Image (cartoon, rainbow, N blue to C red; front, side, top):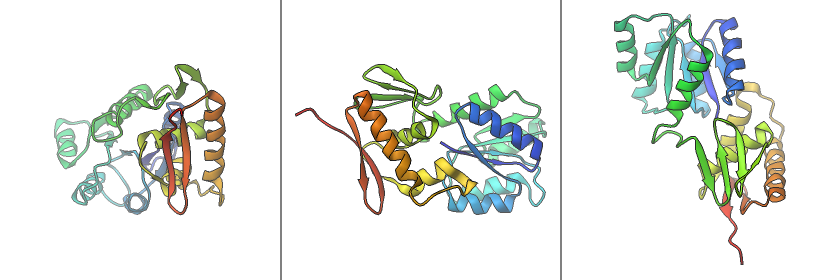
Length: 226
C-alpha cells in the first residue's frame, strides 16, 4: 500500500512521510492541487492525506473533482480548519475522514488503517491464501502458523499478491506501490523483488507460488499436494 500526501508544508510533509513509513504506509507527496490531479490520474495509491489550504486551489475542489470522476480512493482531510461547518463541507464533498491540526501521528495512522479496512476498499487487516497469512498492520508474515520477518519490499509484493490472489496483478501496480514518485525503478526492479519473495516463500514451506504472466504481471496460486 502507498499513500499520497497532498500538502505544501515541507516540514509537515517530512514528518508525515517518516511517521507513515514507520506505520507500514510508505508515502509520496505533492504540494499543489494541479500536481495531485496529475499524479492521481496516472498512478495508483491506496489512500490520500489531503490538506485543504493548497497554494493553487482549495483542497475541497480537488476532492470534489475526484468524486465526480468516480474515484473511490479513501481520502483523509488533514487541516487547521476545524469548525463544524468546515468538517461538514469536507465530508459532504466526499472526504472519508477528517483530522484537525495539530494531530497525533498514532491517530493519523490508526484512522488511515481503519479506512483501508473498510469493505470495498482494501479488505481487512489479515490477508491469507493457502498456508500464508500477512498481518498488514504489524507487517509480519506467517507460513503454516510460523512467523517470518520478510524485508519491507518483499512484504509489499506479497501484500499486493494476496489482495489479488487468484487474479493477475499488473506489473504497473507493483511499480506504483513499491517506488511511487521516486523514479528509482530499474528495468527489472520488480522482477528482483518477486524473485526474492519466491525464495523466501519456498524456504518457509509455503503452499503458494508466484507465477509470471508475461507482458502483464504476476499471479499467486496455491500449489495443491499431489
